[in-house]
Length: 78
Image (cartoon, rainbow, N blue to C red; front, side):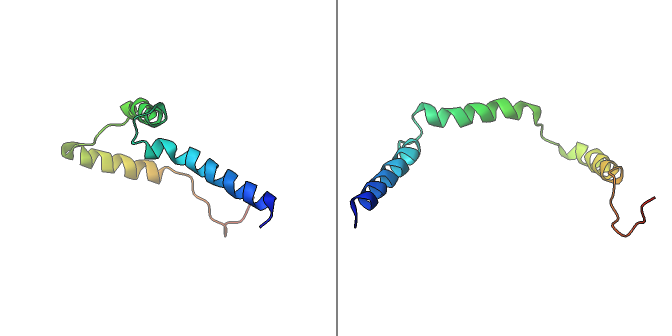
């Protein structure tokens, strides 16, 4: 092996170790808390659909799907 190949191999191993360090540390660092904070910020607009709302939800989904524009490649253009 040439010196360049050895240097590139060592650099790749160091880069891989640096990328995996937060995961291997057990999530006790700042790097692991950032995705959790993002998820908490993102989830408040979500809500759980309860069983009594499921029929209304299904009708609303069907209505929305029916109102979507469609594309027919066989249709003639004007």
